[in-house]
Length: 279
Image 1: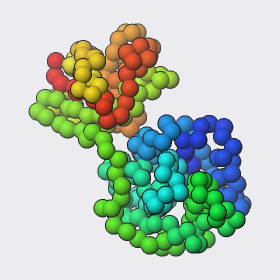
Image 2 (image 1 turned 180 degrees about the vertical axis):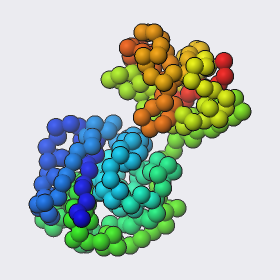
Image 3 (image 1 turned 135 degrees about the horizontal axis):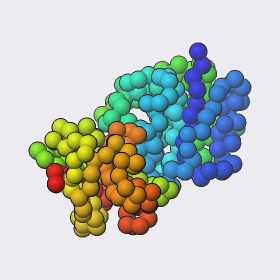
Image 4 (image 1 turned 60 degrees about the horizontal axis):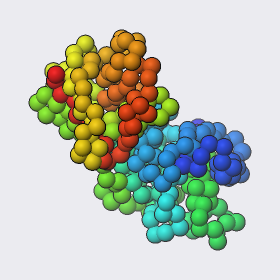
């Protein structure tokens, strides 16, 4: 059975370069199913790319071939690779930090460097700025269509050598959980962390409880307040802040029918942290 190919990039929605990636896939095998995940990853942000993959991968069939192209080092000595995940799916990507959350949270069984002597689109070998089309889409299509097996990607190297992007790892104390704000959605104003929601119950904080949240930017407090833990937005009044379980089972904070990110000028990344403790 042929595998689907799922594409994500930082090219921007509607960018014609995505069409060329799809075209290469169809040249390799006209019967392949090729889908878009997102092309709005923040430019050059490999940790955002990793977060987007972590969000999507569990909800596609095992064996799906994901292509992630967020590649500020394109054309340099950074590796191009295909990671075989614990669930049997694949990620085709530059090894530049994009696999960080996949390794930590989903598990990687094996990783292979792409052999570009065979797994590279033949007519563009003098082009060094678009590996998304010429290496990743081409290799993904060959793998998904059965032209090559996984061993045909190229030589294996240790999973321990995968490049990991720096980030704040979550921690759990007796009465507090702490971690990084992984995403701050401007569209809905959702503040998503990398802290597992289940940790709240493990620290004695349940639905209906009020908790103290503290958001810091580079160590400086920008928001501290007491809010309820609720199942969803409709359990609190309009304009009320709440803590709840995100779609990826991480702690998320928002304001019901308001945009917390815009109104409070919140960001994300390694400088932005959230702590939740018993009130």
